[in-house]
Image (tube, rainbow, N blue to C red; front, side):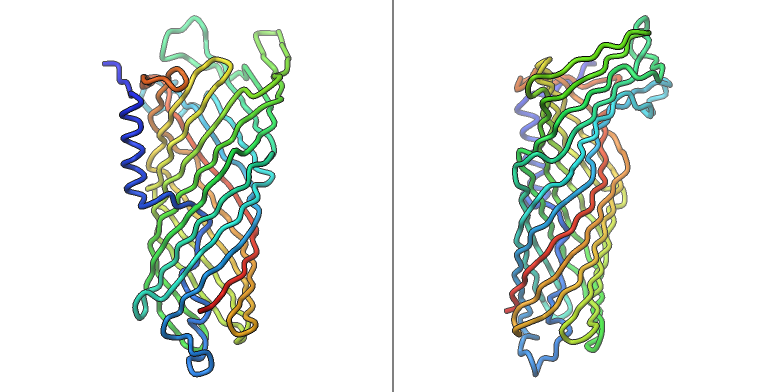
Length: 343
């Protein structure tokens, strides 16, 4: 039976996912341990509330990956890659605001949201591999490169948010260690234009250029995770922070790919993906109520896949593919500077 998705059902599904997410939160990973958690209470008077507000700005590098997988072996494994689009980030510039607090005794929590600025962010590469045109679906792919194209990549916008909560094991002299649970949301919206292509057919190589915008791509990540954060006081004014989290095959992606030259839209739902991220931060306390810090961030998710639908752009009918699965992956790293006010 042919499976279809209407625009109404697609919107309903997205609303359910967003409701489960809790909000439009996005993802650089927020700290949930306040700087004053290791401070002397008589000296600072800050041990009771432990509330902090931070503003930060940074750059994010790396690549977001878009895949199409085929069931080339006929065993429903969909493990044969027939298309790959690399959305390279060189870089995205973003700014945001975060807050963290002691929720209750040894319970700490944090929340943050960041926005990426519209700008040219690098380039996109698109590769497609050949299948035997005499076959009928499912096609037998030959592994020969059929099409390569390159486009300048621009960011419409990006939204990152993160929220987490953890239980702290506190050594008043040196270290706070928390075991935490959290949720990250990431959204990127790109478009590609001013590109060129190589089309390989047998022994013929056709080249050409694209005069304007030819593709838009939106990738939304929903990542519940578990992790740990360590705050280590080197000296009273200088703190070192480590953060590590993992989503053990619980990540979901909703991706929307618009091929403007063919008026075709693809909706992909990669699911049950693995994701991990880490952060190292150094902060310096000054003027009693301020801290300046620098963060280094790394995020990685290997390829995972899910159902793929297609239809006319902005139509009300999307057909589930029985021969392809859509996939996603990411590898990003970044650097940010932050100013924190300690209440």
